[in-house]
Length: 589
Image 1 (cartoon, helix red, strand yellow):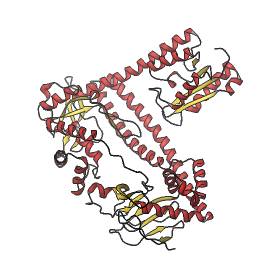
Image 2 (cartoon, one colour):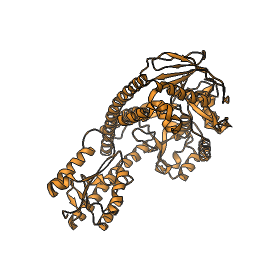
Image 3 (cartoon, helix red, strand yellow):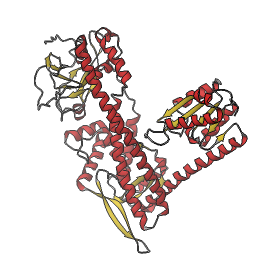
Image 4 (cartoon, one colour):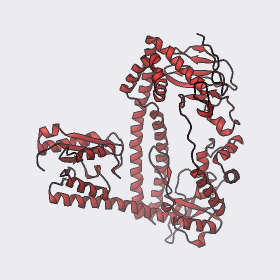
């Protein structure tokens, strides 16, 4: 490469682990390479583009796209990366990229593989290496799928939490050479089987997940883990093929859906259930996603089915029909207290509900309703709705009065900052550790799955399967905790600079609040307020740093009160009647 023009560095890492080839390490190694080959001056003036938290499976990355946009403007002459796959793991994308860079006369250097596209040999070797890298990945993926095919032929349960209606049971068999093989199958739990049948019947009767949920809540039915049913858990149960009886109708349906079927039609005996492997896409920190049925690997299981094929398919079509219905977007989303307002009766969150009426200001009238009350149709919780327009306005007024006393106000801000930043640092550390553990756990499973093919039919196979099951359960637990922490930190994801800027804005809150956007008002409230509890007549507002704890009463009682900045209570009336948009109210100190 000619020693002219700007040199840039590109670095990428799919997830933060705190060790290994981090973004910083990649950049430093690239700088050392540039320093060695092009001199100190070039190393000191390099441009750096970095994407962290993005996969190499495609080129949809913000900093990468920015780099390529600036490449078109001839802003630099060479791109240096630590390793080839930092740019892309896809041979098609990579080939197009190199062709595009060549057309713009921009060189590409990968220091790990020592490839340099400024020479013909470098370009050839880079293509060859990229082809072999992709071949290796595809071979591993194919090997994993082949192993899943072999496992599916057995129709056994591979581990994890059994679905509602079943428990896992260990079974043994003796091979032709006298070896004992152990596996697991699902065994029915009669009382849970009855519940599964009830859920299917109720959904077919109502045609609605919401109505089915309400029925289950009103009648005290709970999940396998003792939690209340939600629409999501009900849908997951209804769409699980494990309950479908392997009959003629089931066989026809699965063939129509082009699943990878590993059982003959003769095995569909009208008794056993269906086992579907490779059914979900599992990603750390995210809810599992269902894969298209074409990717499922399906066989007849060792367990007994519950729901006839025709009935199960009818339920799937109802679910699809409901999914296709248009979602009615709320007319307005100006509520300020979502995620902060808690029902004082049951402890669930209260959500805004927008009506079709407007108040004298021309604003849509909205109320806050307890989520459990809504889902159970007032059977489990009958908390009185709270007028959202009035409560939001009252909270803003309290913040205005709070900001008038600058010394007390900034002391409260410091308390909030210590709580938020202190918790965030601990959470960030735990998140980093969890991501590292999840990655290591996934790598161990991949290694064991690769070894499983070689150990097929040997005593080692059972041992490897046991290890895979243990690691799978461990991974699921880690991912659940990771998802909880990421959800928790996302609501308070402020840097110190952002918090300080917010503090400056709050210092003039009284004079500027009317000009703020809804998002700015929400941020202002969340910088001061930890939570708000509504008991039907009063709003208990708890500020950060306060040791006040609300005692959930059996029945809502009392008059309106707010917990002040020093933990003492200040009384004020709050109109609770839905639709009473302009009540008379007085505040008393």
